[in-house]
Image (cartoon, rainbow, N blue to C red; front, side):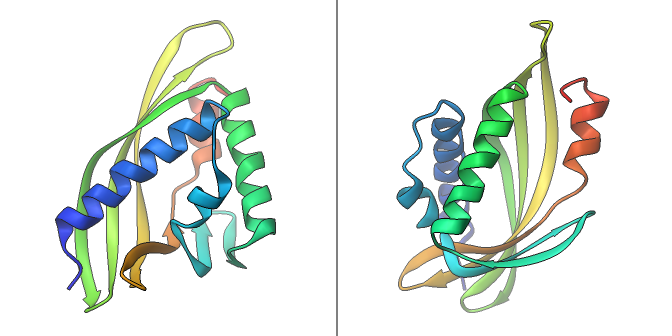
Length: 145
């Protein structure tokens, strides 16, 4: 089974990569290495499947630019719970806390969770999917969009 401590360590590192990206210092190869060869994204907008590669990295780079433009400052992994699927797969429910700065310079903290589908591939943990709520609605509610 995938060890909970390994998953927690992985998402602490994931948070650091996210924060580096929001600061404009992302190594997209390093970020891409955290994802499997293919993935599925499930949001209220629908289900999307994709492959890890240049197109994915370009999409993520644009996403980080959008987060930065709307005031994202830092993301902190607060907690991780793990539900095993089998020997090499699990669902990681990650509690995140995001710090944002509104256009009027007021700071806001938004706590949320994301369910990640995680696999062990070639000895490393990799994300192969995620399930999220409606982040756009949350950002609007908090005056970030």
